[in-house]
Amino acid sequence: MRPLASLLILCLAGCAAAIRGPALSPAQRFGRCLKSSVDGDVFLSSEQPAAVHEEAQLWNRLYSNSTPVAFVRPATVDGVAAAVKCAYGAGVKVVPKCGGHSFMGYSARDGTLGIDLSRLNKVTVSADRRTARVQGGTKQGQLYYAVWKQAGNTTAVVGGTCPTVGVGGFLQGGGLGFFTSQFGLACDQLIGLQMIDYQGRLVTADQRQNSNLLRAACGGGGGNFGIVTEFHIRLVQVPPLLTTSQLRLAGNQTAVDFMLWFQSHVLNTASHKLAFDLRLSTTGKNVAQVQLNLRWPGREAEMRAALVALSLLGPSSPWAPVLNPKNTTFEAPWILTAVADDKSSVPKTNTPEDLLRYEEIWATRRYLKEKSYCSLEPLPAATWARLFQSLARSKSAILVHRMGPKTAFAQVAPSATAFPWRKALFCLQHLKYFDNPEEVASVIAGLKDAKDVLAPHMPGMPGYVNYIDQDISPNPLFSYYGANLGWLRQVKRQFDPEARFSTNPLSIPPAAPQ
Ligand SMILES: Cc1cc2nc3c(=O)[nH]c(=O)nc-3n(C[C@H](O)[C@H](O)[C@H](O)COP(=O)(O)OP(=O)(O)OC[C@H]3O[C@@H](n4cnc5c(N)ncnc54)[C@H](O)[C@@H]3O)c2cc1C
Image (cartoon, rainbow, N blue to C red; front, side, top):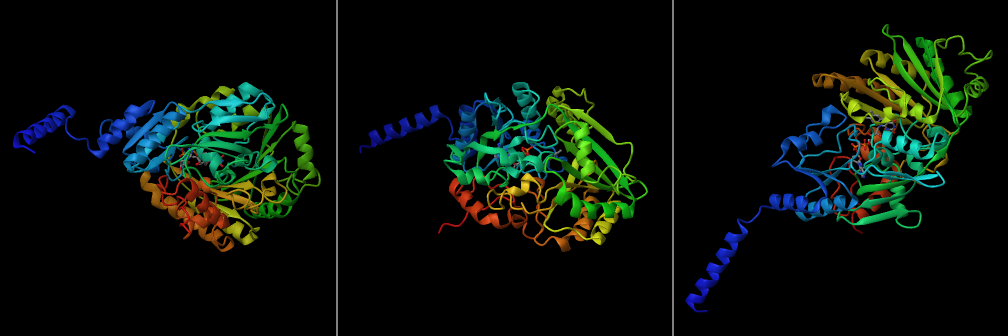
């Protein structure tokens, strides 16, 4: 080439570069991709650090300090897909956030793209009121309210106890609540889903296609396989009124005797329709106490008859004389039982609209630590006694979720879904809220004290993945997935082979290629 022509070409290239401006850094290209393709809010930490920090605030204040590179809040499923594609191109990992209630803060992570799904909250009940399509960013309260509005008082959701929890994490982790014994886990009602995979493609799973993904989405935990943008769930039919009752008994020996009776009698004989959960704690004077949280699908008289038949109440009951006479019993339509189940400090109007007061409930968020244990065997008297003593030392409470052979929960085989502990008699949740982060070491010590009491009876420490805790055992993936881990890793390899959604220490790793 002649020198003059070369000079001209160089000059033209330089001019073009000058017109284009300086080359963009990968981070700038990523930001530009998000801004140009996501239909919704886009917050880059380089431009709006305060907005990203705000998005990273989770229910547990202990884990609200992460530093994602960006957060988006898409308005549509296409927006979710576009954000995932940008992240894939930029080599950035992706974290979906629904209700933000992950106990370990797994819905906002350092160096990732956070996808806040809160604008995807549409709920559509089918004409026959038997199923609903629920978008993946819906909160439980929004779901209950929408189902009640569209289907009335006798159609219900198998849900949990807190309206601000998101369906995204709750359903995929399992979903325990007052209907567990009658209808099974919330995820046992899952009949299909739609998911955006790691490359931004839409995947459908139901009984006919990708049924392994559907199976994995029931207990496999949120955030492992992709971003679920729609859950298709079964609804349940309930009577116009349900009865709720809270009873209490106290006394060190009485409480232990009651727990033995609960294990040998209630778990083996109580109707599956009777919700029978317990709260174990101690009084101000360190005396063991048990609160019985009962619910019956029907009128108060029917519940009383069921409790007399169970020998909890009535002339032949050993417990009637010691049960606190100031019990609170009320009848209410299902939707108002959901309102009552919210134990936040926000004053209630006792209307279904209480379920939508997300901002007010969110404002009450605190610090918390917790552990869970699913017990496959009855515990001996000495262990219950030591557990109450431990609760007195740590001034904390344990919730006991009834399971066992009579329940619908137990009718599903342990390998039929990802939730492995279907043979559990009950799951315990040990949870402690606190207001000063400096208390964390003493709170952890209190939880460990109780864990040491329980550990000899719980080989492998079976736990509930929605009450996630990375210190549950030396092998947390066994604790949460048991023998199902092998096939869950295969599902992970099929839908997220590059582990683009693996953003926390308990993410399910993809199976190694064969
Ligand atoms: C106050 C409170 C009350 C609770 N009550 C109950 C109860 O009654 N019963 C019960 O079983 N559990 C209960 N839980 C536990 C709760 O079910 C889990 O913490 C659950 O994972 C929270 O879901 P989330 O969507 O709110 O949380 P997030 O923190 O948003 O998500 C949890 C995990 O799921 C992922 N995820 C979220 N949405 C999606 C999606 N659409 N697709 C893919 N992945 C997603 C996230 O990345 C994260 O890894 C409670 C927790 C709290 C804090």
